[in-house]
Amino acid sequence: MIKIPKETGTFKSFDGCEIYYEVRGEGQPLVLCYGIGCIMNHWQHQIRYFSKTHKVITFDYRAHHQSQIPTNPGLLTVEALAKDIKGLLDHLAIEKAGLWGHSFGAQVIVEAYDMFPERIHHLIFINGFVQDPLKGMFGNNLASSFFQLFKHGYSLLPDLLKKAWKMSVNNPLAIQLSALAGGFNLQLTHLKDVEIYARGLGALDLESFITLFEDMIAFDGRDILPRIQVPTLIIGGKKDYVTPQKHQMKLHRMIKGSDLLMVPYGSHCSQLDMPDLINLAIEKFLKSDGLTFEAHRIKGL
Image (cartoon, rainbow, N blue to C red; front, top):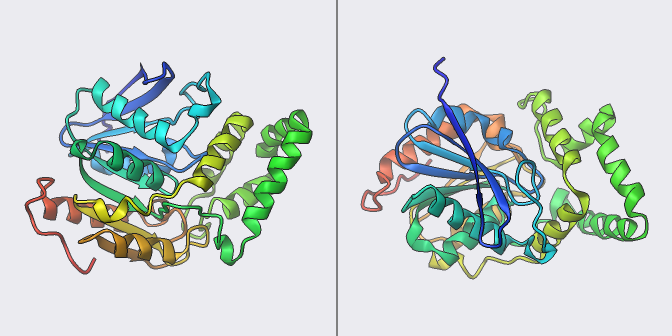
């Protein structure tokens, strides 16, 4: 297996917050945006596959992993993350790129499209949503109540909650809970990927995570969808209980000319569950569109 060289770097975004990024491969640029609290490992199969033919760019959101926490907590927002993408494109001297968003990453790329559509040549949503995902998560509204309870507990006992947050990653039960909360299908996804996710989540600054999580809940990008005029592929999992099929169906209905693929047995992390299927579907989409917006879109994925 040929290993594609990796270039790493940082840049200062619009507010001076330092953002970490990685670049692999050459060709048409693709920017991959993971979910809230997630890690680049969620894109491992796509990075490995598409960096053979494209310039694949991944980055850490502000307050995530190797990127800085902004000095102003008010800039932990979807809007700020979208501005970071523009800063990343400027820093790398990229005129246009395809934006891919998994889960919460869908909000980020929709906001980016709203802010600078001329810099985006296609969009790919994987298990994405553009409004409050907690409503209807796991078939009920308990997730909303749990988050409010957790946030209240943090306001009363921040030090205790921070300690518990960081210690939880060493608990085998926490790994199983992470698999459930993160929407993994353990029959298809390797447990080590769940462990990597859990460790990454536990390493985050809890206060920053809560702040960004609140903005994710408040964000509503539905009004942007009808204005999208670039080739768009929407991928969902038929066994996704975190963002059920209704989210992908809504995206498909509201984005004119978009293509939809629902993955059998796919969980909230379809790109980890069935990477070969996802990669081939994306490759077909990219080849059919030619990344020029003049080719016909594929139908019936």
